[in-house]
Image (tube, rainbow over all chains, first blue to last red; front, side, top):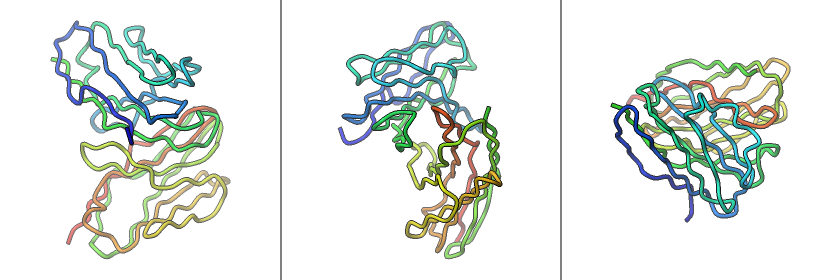
Length: 116
Length: 108
């Protein structure tokens, strides 16, 4: 597609359930990033992929959060045993060449996660 | 680590000029980005500065002073559609660190 796509656009879940969020980057972009945006807060970096490997996962808030990327394309962010504080908009971005280059990151529309 | 400060809110009138400031303290610097984010939408790229000085792009300009850890985004001939949040982001060694954003409200 022309831009970064994410699914689902909205997800409501119960506390304790696991959720999977999907990101399809722009075709040909080797770098992929996950961010979280909570109400009134800035974008919080979670994890960065270069190809299928994750050289920087320093932003993952706990071991309940994990992510993978396959085929150098689609990425899935998994949150296990969701908590109410996980409620936020999860944004994915991709860039052409990667974090050690100054390439612009292009964002998807996000997944709004609500944990009841 | 990185610390980025920008005002929380600003208001301006249609047709006017507004300047949104951003100050930063970083452990590494590989450029500063400005993004625009309308409510409920994804951030969209506006500008990038890595050298000191002014970058102009139509109605939008961005300025950087690395020695002062300071940038501003200048919006001219404001339009109602410019009402949005403006995010300042600094590229460190590997990733972007974002400020909390400045909500700009443009009134008629």
